[in-house]
Length: 115
Image 1 (tube, rainbow, N blue to C red):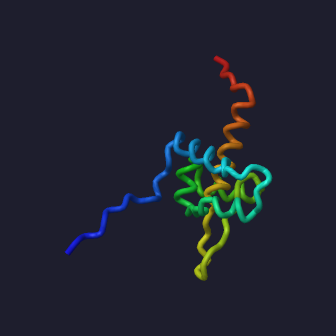
Image 2: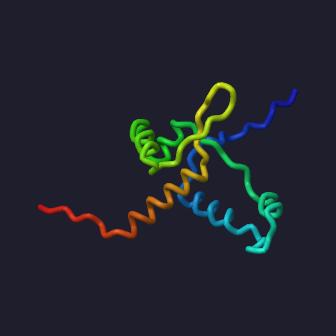
Image 3: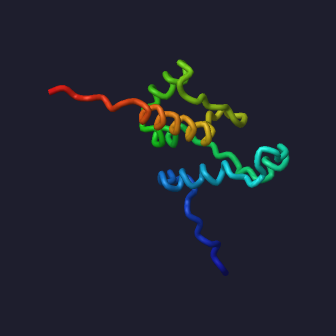
């Protein structure tokens, strides 16, 4: 009896270089601005959902910080899926938030420490 192939888990956090490559490939659908919505949706990759522990690991903040920032409108809010009321975040929204944080941080001069 043959055993099923071993599949690597898909819940690991991709390296920065993988995220950059993925974001670059997502924006280049090959259809240009004139493509129809049907053309774009046919080539779009499926969305991934993240649970709270995955979001915490990605953004390096606590549960309390995440929910406080959601209340202030400064962090993507989760959506509720299923009958059991499970909250999940859309990976693309978390990635966009991260990109905005990086751009904002690099657009300002670094804080100087006084000694």
